[in-house]
Length: 306
Image 1 (cartoon, rainbow, N blue to C red):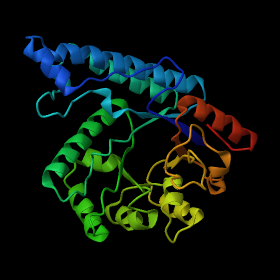
Image 2 (cartoon, rainbow, N blue to C red; image 1 turned 60 degrees about the horizontal axis):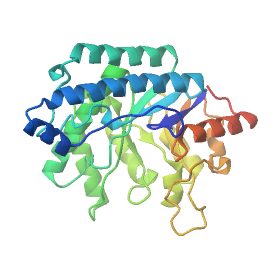
Image 3 (cartoon, rainbow, N blue to C red; image 1 turned 60 degrees about the vertical axis):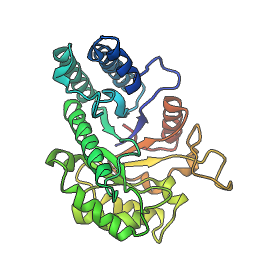
């Protein structure tokens, strides 16, 4: 069956994830207070809300959820970073991770991550690559604790030489732990890398392509949707995950890259209908409302949804 995925946040449901800033943590520290106690409370709240998110998805026919990268705020920051076992409630926090993982498994909710844009594995700047690897290892830790099976990133910059940049991606991929290599996926974007650009990389280093059809329509190549879909599917060694969104002002406008509140059902590729197993991330501003609306529309058209 196909499952629709909610991405990170909620529009109407009272489920919220907290964060903080390095500046505020340093202010706390300057006052003689322990920033780890403040972080401890935020993380406990975030895990409680992640459990609520999993339950909400289960109750509303949403069978996948993309987890916000800030679940453990500033975890990798050079000044304010920490380890889970440094936190005052580390045992309770580890237990909360396990509870979310067990609940997701019991209710067949697939979990994934999509790190922020500053994770650039093919940067020519060594410090950027080092920070990107550290951030991906952090995501690997969270994925392991929660049972998530995807850490998705973009190809990165072209830097005037896309062939060379993707070669650098492959080289830096080898620096990742086996755990993260086994979870990492790469997505075509709407400005630099098309599916046709990334597929040779995926085939070379054996990582899946997250096919974003909206990005492909914004930045086309020699592949049509059917061909890109088929080739992307061939890169997966687990349930494939694709992305869908609709342009905010329609396809006739100058900038179709901006996302609409909802998904226009006509933007969903008919080629995806007969795929036996597929997760589709719904990238829409109306969040859970958009997912549930599309779910109902697809059911009426006879789609087989989880």
